[in-house]
Length: 150
Image 1 (cartoon, rainbow, N blue to C red):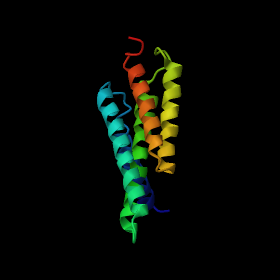
Image 2 (spheres, one colour):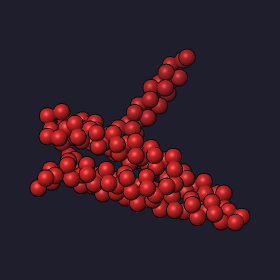
Image 3 (cartoon, one colour):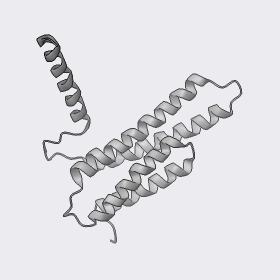
Image 4 (tube, helix red, strand yellow):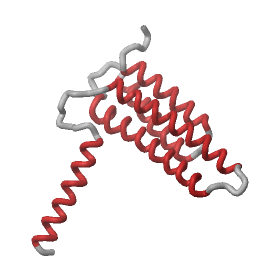
C-alpha cells in the first residue's frame, strides 16, 4: 500500500472514530452532563418503538399490504431500540454509573435489564416488551436521581 493509501486509511479511521465519539457525548471527560435530557430521550425512544410496533401490526393485517411501509417501520423500531441501548450503555453505564455510588449493583442490574429489554423490543411487536422496558426505565430513573425510598 502506498503512502496515499496509508494516509487515506488513517483519515478514514480518524473520521469514523470522531463520529462515534461525538454520538457518545464526549468521554474527555468534560463534566457537562444532561441526565434529564437522556431520560427524556429514552422515554421518547420507547414511545416511538411502541408506535412502530402498532404500525407494523396494522400493516401486517392489511390486505394487499404495503411492504415498503412495513419495512420502514421495522427499521425505525430497530433504530430506536439501538439508540435506547446506546444511551443506556454509552452514557449511563460508561460515563455516569460509578462503583462508589449508592445502589451501584441495583443500577447495574437495571441497566442490564434495560439493554436486554431493548433487545426484546427488536425481536417482537408485543407491546408488553415496551411496557416492561418502560417500568425498568422508571425504576432506574427513580433510583439514579436519588428519589428511591423518599
